Image (cartoon, rainbow, N blue to C red):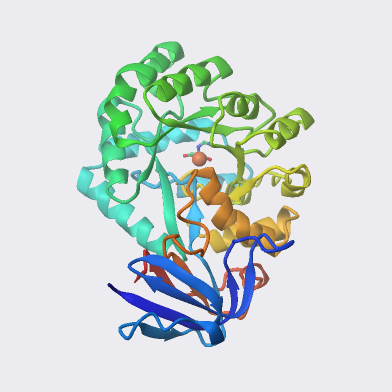
Amino acid sequence: MTAFLLTNIGELTTNVAVGGDPCGTLHDAAILVEDGRVEWTGPADRAPDGGAAADVVDAGGRAVIPGFVDSHTHLVFGGDRAEEFAARMAGEQYAAGGIRTTVAATRAATDDELRTRLGAFVAEARAQGTTTLEIKTGYGLDVETETRLARLAAQVTEEVTFLGAHVVPLEFADRADDYVDLVSGGMLAAVGPHARWIDAFCEAGAFSLAQSRRVLEAGRAAGLGIRVHGNQLGYGEGVALAVALGAAAVDHCTYLSDDDVAALAGSGTVATLLPGVEFSTRQPYPDARRLLDAGVTVALASDCNPGSSFTSSMPLMIALAVREMRMTPAEALWAATAGGARALRRDDVGAIAPGARADLVLLDAPTPVHLAYRPGVPLVRRVWKDGVEI
Ligand code: NIG
Ligand code: FE
């Protein structure tokens, strides 16, 4: 048995709700970790000793939070789109079609190249406190490359999403329905065994409501859970589709009608907001306050991808959500941890509770408010995943 006691924590965010505090904040606290799981949390002066073998780690009065759960990334790809970003900052508009540039670079890359790159992105995310990562395919868009991407992603996470319905590839131009047949047929059969989830980009310039529904229903019949990209570039039917299908999450939610908000509020579908996208595409931010006030469960994720949000930084998402989306620091922290766990339908991550995975982040700050208060400053001091320091 390996055990350690993390003690002298100035402020501990457990996400185990107490009274009116969904973050379950404890002061002068300690955590006992045994065999990769949280064994106990509570006041430091009442901590069990964990047996003679337990090491003691002194937090020095700093804050400890659950590891971030980044429930939306696209981390397996070749090339980058720095020129497209520069053009956009000079006034060009973002469009879904840019995805095809990355598809060409990804198809041309070897497995070793993609694996090395992916490993570097995962290390970058971990160093910033992300301990659970969802990763999508979607830059292959042929059976062989989508399968390669899913296999590579499965080497670094259990949360792999098949996104064959990301955009219609060039070789299927003017034959979108034939491509949808492929995605929901042979491509799903090849990629599905490596994935837990299926996703579709339901948006003008990508896939229609009917096409998205066909792909998602085929995925569900193959045993995959459903997630949706929707309402990113304009009002649309992505949210309604996600709720109707009982999706775990609908992601982006930048343009929402009152009906969309009401449908989300009465559903088990999480609204995942991706403010890195609005930052990097110079679009208006989604209104998190409107969703929270309606009772919708909100998650924050990075959407790390080479086109619309090339950052893996969850602290940046928190800062943007607080500054630009009317979330409080506590709401943003919850959304980036427990919210992400809800979006992935996981109860073993996103909280520091007995039995949960010991995914912990020690901040170089007295409280997690500093994540938004000190934007751009590297405040993540130490990270443990499954009780092992990274
Ligand atoms: O989540 N919206 C669709 N997919 C990505 C963008 C991918 C790209 O531009 O390469 C997103 O923003
Ligand atoms: Fe995305």
